[in-house]
Amino acid sequence: MSKLRGIALLSKCPLKYITPSFQSFPVPVRNKYAKGTSFADFFQNPIYRKEDQAKIIEMNELSKIAAIPVKPPAVYQTSSVYHDPLVDKVINHVMKKGNKKLARELVEKAFENIKRVQIERYHLASPENKSKIELCPKEILHKAVENCKPLLHLLPIKRGGITYQVPCPITDHRSLFLSIKWLLEAAKDRERTVHFPEQFAWELIDAANNTGKVIKRKQDLHRQCEANRAYAHYRWQ
Image 1 (cartoon, rainbow, N blue to C red):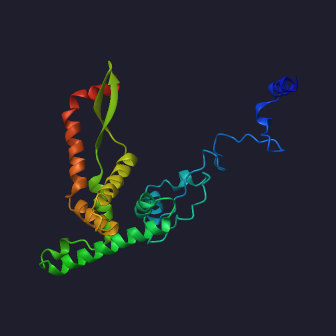
Image 2: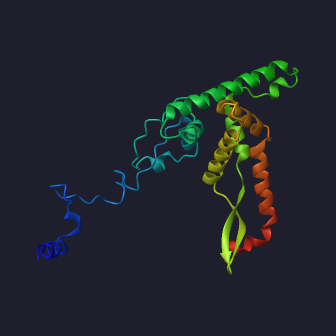
């Protein structure tokens, strides 16, 4: 009888106040959803780079956004001339388990290797070809990422029980993500005796010159999109 009374009491008690036998206090039910931001949707992202501010002034759009509330900039957002958003994005992609210090050191070592290779090529080149050799690692990174960006991608669409690989245009955000991802995957696909910064430096140099594994991967993707152009009309059906 005592067991039946206990079951009856548990059936009447709400689920969120049921406590295990080893606890003497109710267990609170946590919210399933993450806490939202403290800023409303109409708050705009800060424009902290001097180049972007100059563009807004040139286009006479400063008066349009002067009265719009703006979010405060993040810790890593600065107007310093040494700040590069693309370098920060690459560091975040290299980072694992929140170890950003190690990721920054790896990228800096890769830049150092690029500088050494390019300076060596500069001194060995003829006077006519010296002006064509880029010595800045950040410029090489920008050029490599731009050369590796795909213009199309294959989207699986199911029609009549058959899945077709339909070529579709790709957004700039997705194209940038794939470019960085392919470069890092090519750098990680290396021999055990070769360290990541060294291999990553060579991949960036090859991609900046429109050669290497990443450029071939992008061209293969474009070739597949060209072969499947007959399925392009499935995008609108």
